[in-house]
Image 1: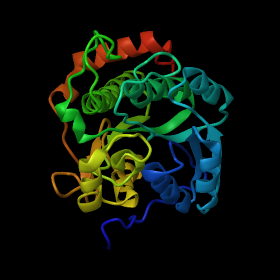
Image 2: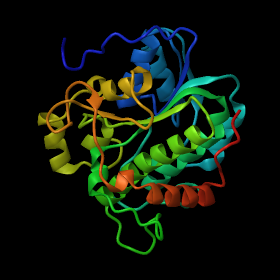
Image 3: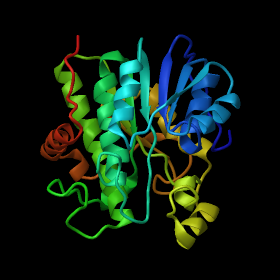
Image 4: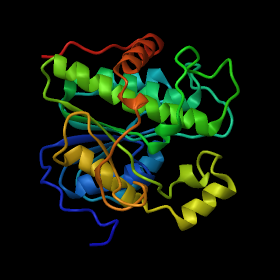
Length: 294
């Protein structure tokens, strides 16, 4: 089987999956595979026209709804309009930008879009979630330094790579603390994370973020795998037999490409105190909290 071939997924009839950023790249590849497996897929996207074009190229039941993770008002509106169960929430959408920018709420754009937006969305949707919350992270987290006294990079020089790595560490810490809270609440919902590897997308080539540069374009051309291959760890996290708090990623080339398997994470990503501190900061910044379940 080719490395980017999607393995047989379970029949997902009568399941609803929300995929943020599902209009392109890894998100679209993930959504397409889930729709092929007969899930009802909702593409939660900033650009609904682009989302509609992506949905038209997919089989099965695919809907498009507006969601801008860089705007908490949009996050709240999406969650408030939701009715019915969410079997799987895939927090896929993310950005990487070369210069410091801010979200509608004044957060540093990468931290706000990659962590705070999904944090708020998950907490607001959690009463509807019946199966799993999948958050996309990256092995870039191993190079991260998460400064919770200055999470929005207001008092130190901005670096695209450092900001991205910090947001990906935040995704893993969020997953760990979410799973701890779900377990304590007696919820059967799993919180898991996925590292797609090095994938050719607008983010890695710089065509959507403005980043990437010559090095990024070289790696994208000679090292990166396709979005379909990058979706494999996400699909394993979303539908496979994985433990609570699992982290999935590619099998080969230092977990950068090919297949999907369980992978490890850094010591700081396993730090429960850091995870709890991040959760408290995120609650304060977003005004959202872990809901009462049951």
